[in-house]
Length: 89
Image (cartoon, rainbow, N blue to C red; front, top):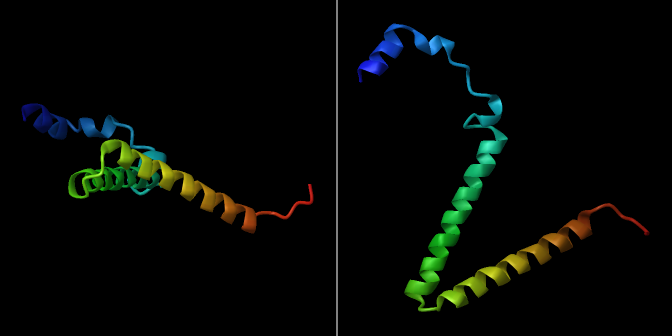
């Protein structure tokens, strides 16, 4: 407590470099990191729901998420191919 009071009274806070805009809470980088953490929490809750509420074995839950990953990659690939540049290669 005394260190913090001395930090304020002695104005030591003026010598600290500000945080770069890349690492600010509203930057694209930090927003993307937040979205990844939210996705991981959603996956964790989904895994818990599948194993605890529905009684699916753990390997079955992994299989569901693995297939969902493959399917979403397939869809994203098809969409990117459909709306991507046209090439007669």
